[in-house]
Image 1 (cartoon, one colour):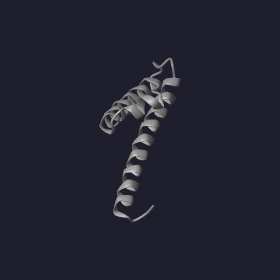
Image 2 (cartoon, helix red, strand yellow):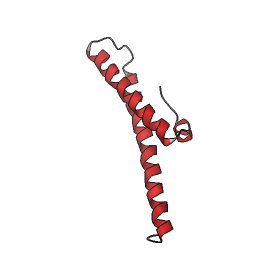
Image 3 (tube, rainbow, N blue to C red):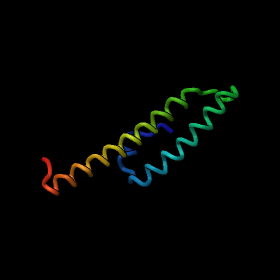
Length: 78
């Protein structure tokens, strides 16, 4: 699928979660095809893994920024 970072950032966290599940399922299918020697473009494996990593990174960044803003609101840290 090869998603761009800007495309991922535009998505909601829920949409990203659903997309991760779909891409992980796709990755399993790609690995299976690769083992059966049916996958001709093996670069799809790498790009799919990178897309999943990008999406998980964005989710983690959002989670950390929410935690940080909650702490600042409470006056715990700066």
